[in-house]
Image (tube, rainbow, N blue to C red; front, side, top):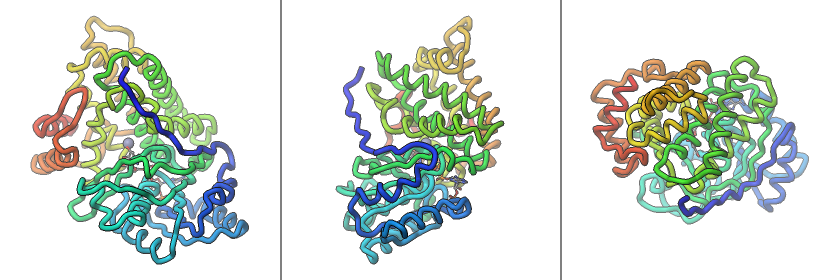
Length: 392
Ligand code: NZQ
Ligand code: ZN
């Protein structure tokens, strides 16, 4: 087992009606003015924002608001948020929404707490040294940003989707009420389940060695998400299934399933981020579209890991050769994606990049990772082109 640091400082308040506690959670922060940051309308339509505003008014919490965050959150709104926070002397941000709203809040938090252009932190020019404190009322189980140190922002100019990871942006609290996720369109529920799975799969496919406990936790998490994602296709209002998926979402990206590993592979994520930057696809769907092609391309490098995945997670019986078992595991995962109506190719994702665009995607990806992609197999630009092409 590799040495590791595990840091998960976010207070989790989980359960039915948990958002009623948001007033007390904010008061514990001793802040003067809150920015309520939200997305493109779902939190208003569901009545959640009205309920939160009523709590704030009742508790005498002063706030300003900024909505309009879109999936693949944009840098331009981040700049707007930074200016608003500075003008209004905001000292706490409450995100109401999903990964996109949380990430936009994190970027605003970096921009307010540090001098200079916030994009520098996503462009490897500088590292942030602080972030405004942030909390969330989560409305979609997916990105895991509520407990992760990551923040992913898209700069419109050039379609650049880039990440910045530090512990400064770890949230103070995360309010997780599974009932809030029941208004999600089925496609977003499935995208979320895919992303949750991938956060553990990225860590699981590694070159580490003896990690019995971490493997056990990871395999249980993956089986749980697969089982409950299938239930949610038929029963979107099944509370227990929503709850299992929501808790898995936070645990899958708070570092727990990476303890003792070499950090994991992350190639599928990085390849997908470029698709999000260029074509504005939903993150989870982009991951599903590309994972099978990545897995077939690299599985020979770490066959025993793919065999373990096939047998322990997908329930595949051992075949004549390890290669066949590994391939059956990959095929079973793709069958699962189809069952929850996720794409397994770029065509099914609804995009058709040209050869030129594939080259551009690979080159941008290589720049974003500074020439260092993949643990199962190190991928250079030619490898990335081959994977994007195979995913067509
Ligand atoms: O904007 P609204 O109107 O709220 O609609 C959203 C959005 O269209 C909708 N939605 C959310 N909750 C809803 C709802 N609709 C109805 N009922 C509800 N309860 O769902 C859509 C997707 O929301 P979004 O926040 O974009 O989803 P997600 O949580 O999947 O976040 C995706 C973003 O997170 C990044 C992704 O790249 C992408 O930009 N990621 C962030 C990570 C992190 N910070 O740790 C890690 C991930 O790997 C990922 O890269
Ligand atoms: Zn993800």
